[in-house]
Image (tube, rainbow, N blue to C red; front, top):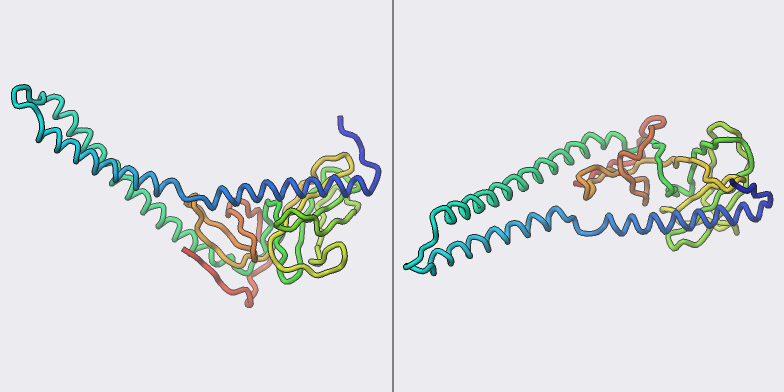
Length: 249
């Protein structure tokens, strides 16, 4: 059973804690996604094993005992394994090329999104041109608190507000709690209700680029923030002429 947070200070502290947890989770996810792609390593290892297999088979044939030569069935079995490894290497190579071509096509088709405002399911809010925006989706009306942290996990902005049980936009002026304008980039955000539960929300930002990702998919960039295309919930308005197109393959 949840306990209602009646103090504005306690509500802010709860939001700060949630924002720090979001920062830790996002940092861990970013570290994992930047790791070397295992698919390329696996293919390289398979090729190496293939060459070793060929060397071992040749050595085995060259040094077999003339008085007790290798049985035909054993020789046939090893040749079948040899052919299977070769076919697997070719299949993996072709599949990698096909996935890369599909990514190129998806990136090319997605460049039309550059300049569009996107509603994205993320706990990272992009600060672009000194502005950030959330689309709150509270389950019930009541007091809430918003907390934002920088990349180091330090809380830079907090705010209390009352929301209705309908979708509500909240705009951030890009300043910290002392009124200092912060640099554009990616910040972590959390919204907490008076009962201690997380308030559902999406972030709103302008798409500035489209890139491949290591999972054979496509990422969209909103300034310094990068998210998977699958997290784009909807698009708002039309592309702006000054956005510029960035597609990376």
